[in-house]
Length: 259
Ligand SMILES: NC(=O)c1ccc[n+]([C@@H]2O[C@H](COP(=O)([O-])OP(=O)(O)OC[C@H]3O[C@@H](n4cnc5c(N)ncnc54)[C@H](O)[C@@H]3O)[C@@H](O)[C@H]2O)c1
Image (cartoon, rainbow, N blue to C red; front, side):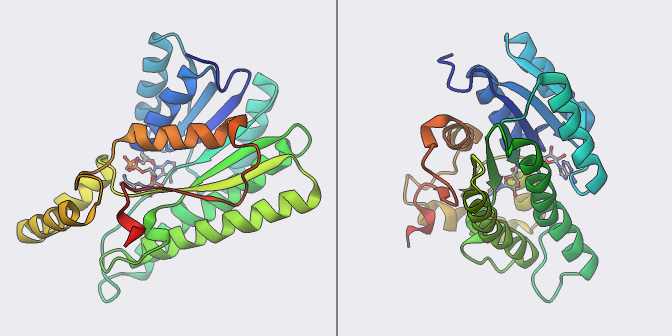
């Protein structure tokens, strides 16, 4: 541990699995007190107890990120218990594969609520408590917020919204003179439950075609990234090392979007 997040309190949504869990672990290794929330409390508790067993500081909370009222409750409780909130990672997200002809309005709205509206709710709640003492908000978008993919139009729409919303919130904070930075992270293909479920949901010939295409099109060795690659990007944006960055897009995709 080198203490890059020493004295910081961080809230990570959807931290019970995948990228959020890896980020929570990495933040705790660097000295942060981490609050991991998830709609699946058992996952969040597993992550928190694993971190505590390794000597880190972490607690788990049940949170559905689409619940507006709960956002203020959780953020205010963190401030009351731990004296402040310095980092928010809006990480919780879902992907429901269905092309534009197949997608239902229910799935579309759920995707926008979980991936998009929650980022607005979280950012608004965090600004309220960070505006005097400062903070860093990290919004997890995706390369799918920059480029399109035929099988996930609802996901594309939500993640593109997160990308530009981040810039809007960053400009607002700067204009108001709040010491708050707001940046987005754009992971490429990272092997987590979300990607595994996406691959499992398609017929075998499509899966083989997708895997072959990724091997061909990911410039860095044709392989998917690891959750730690994203966790390290979040760590940089959460820490004071990125103190002159706001409204920026950190793309971590092995070069996929270069061509
Ligand atoms: N894995 C990738 O390749 C990849 C690529 C680009 C972007 N992302 C984004 O990174 C983030 C994390 O993805 P992941 O791959 O770790 O997914 P994951 O499915 O492994 O984990 C997501 C977590 O979010 C939680 N969650 C879902 N809905 C929630 C809700 N309403 N409230 C609170 N928690 C909720 C889940 O329970 C789960 O623990 C997502 O925003 C995703 O869109 C992932």
